[in-house]
Length: 57
Image 1 (tube, rainbow, N blue to C red):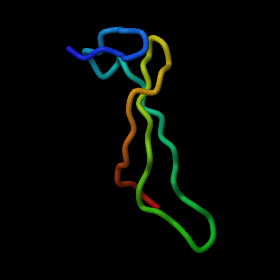
Image 2: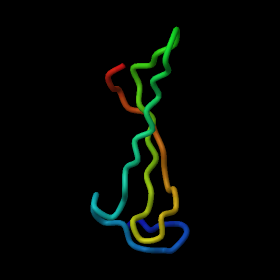
Image 3: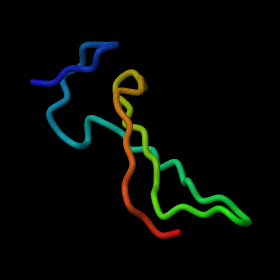
């Protein structure tokens, strides 16, 4: 099983975490087709992971 490193809450399902999308688009010359996200524990709110996913831009 996986546990949150901060509160030791057991993470067994997708609903146990929150995915916060951080839009990486920039106005003007630079635009990105990727979206950055942070995964947080729904129990204590600690950030427990992050990544990049493809997206529109």
